[in-house]
Length: 434
Ligand SMILES: Cc1ncc(COP(=O)(O)O)c(C=O)c1O
Image (cartoon, rainbow, N blue to C red; front, side):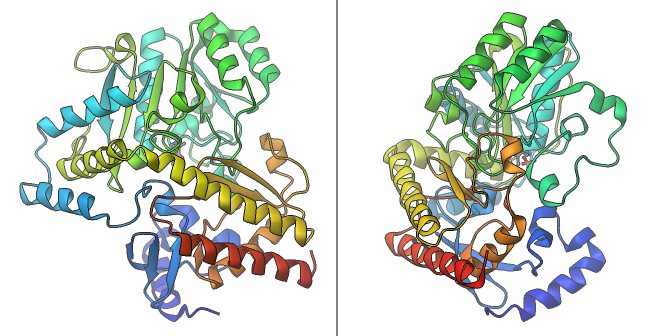
């Protein structure tokens, strides 16, 4: 077993001063019954804990670190920006440059507003859509996560699934009442809602690839169907690309699947690991946002210079190296093959989903296309698999309902070590009994 003495000590104290010892619930490792590793530093594809253990990191800060940790160009850009002042509360040229890069990349983006987190981006996009349409209802999908704002914590995927909390306490029923939920990949469930009240629906929001109930790709034609039905009813279609943006392709899932929504939300990669997110969309919708329009939204630290510098450096690197996308896709495919081979070889009741550099192994013997399929997974088996991977120095999310994030810095040696670890973990699971 890898040593975790120092992590344990810190965690014990952390639990006295922070709820659950963490600042975001899934970090607490409760679903896997272990002590979270307290991180000392990270570089490239590796992350190091306070006990001196080295791990190959497939969490990548839950998505942002597509280029690996402490990338020289990004760190230098942040340092240079910070030297000039960490916050001005006034506009800068760099913000305009970042907005231009986003507009150039993201198909629906005529205009952009920078904010500090994915939660804020989604909350603000929904408000803009409501202001634009003059309607109140929104539609989301069961198992999709869009941050922790009140109206979106309904059937909201990963963190809540991991913690086994169906919905959050503290959300007024009236807030949740304006959120309708449909089933991901189930056109009929969407059609039923629109037939019942389509002309009252301001926005439909979707993760174009669901990645917060584990990775569940859209069925062929599903996104096109959403595009059509929202257009028919005058509803704003929002792609939540906080995970998929600049990951599935430089233009995100929208470019990858060739479907252009009315708005998109971005986060994670566009901040290069710093707190930065954005919402963007068609000019007529974005013009509704304050100060040009009546939809109020603001932020003391929005467009923070150090965060913008990290985001710009990251996007510039991605733009200059378009082959990164084929490379991470290939690495993802290699891992997926290794998992599938081990699953078959050791007769593990598991199945694999992958889109590009996002993948999930689900411990169930059925294919996973919907949220209902996700709920058939064997969480005990995941827990055992997780412990075996962690102990071999492979750092994956401590939850069945999160993605494995493959990045540009994962080397052939990392992948070979990971494949070996997968084989060993699956072999042991099988030998110990399923
Ligand atoms: C698809 C999606 N939307 C929104 C969010 C919320 O982003 P943040 O955690 O930055 O608030 C997340 C976070 O994981 C996400 O995956």
